[in-house]
Amino acid sequence: MKTAIRLFSVLLSIAYPFIVFWGLHSNHYQTLIVFLGLLLLSRFWLATLWQERLMLTLMVALLVSLVLFSETSTALKLYPVMINLSLFTVFVMSLHAKESVIEKLAKLREPDLPAEGIAYTRKVTIAWSVFFLLNATIAFITVFFMSSQAWMLYNGVIAYVLIAVMFSVEWLIRQRVRRQ
Image (tube, rainbow, N blue to C red; front, side, top):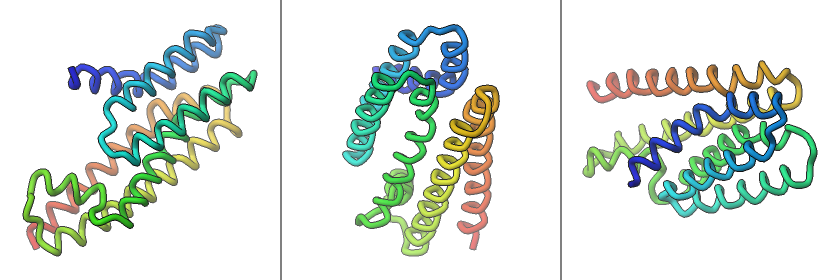
């Protein structure tokens, strides 16, 4: 069941900018609100960290308020900004905890992570924090200063390519660090 929800959430997340673009240009606002609700509900269901659940709850409350009390497409376009800011917050908060997000993930594969590995995971957590903040900033710019087409292109394609590049570069660096 959880695998199906995870797949559903991933597919909804990838499709989000395209569905919002379609909905805004065909005046299907109710469909968009239902879609956003399903997406946020699936993400909440999958969240494992209490911080992530708290951030998602706050994000849902803010987005629902914006959608209900504004008559613009802005609230719907803010979803990628909110997701990136939520991830930024979770990653930064984890730097002040006993283990960072990346350290927890690394320990799933290697429970006895050496001190060098822990230091490395801390740097990776910082790198992802910076990435999420920059991505949120660019997504914000696309909402308020660019066309709907540019918003859809960045948030529906370019952002995912950048995430893939970030994962790939980190994986290459990790392989090099492990050899040393």
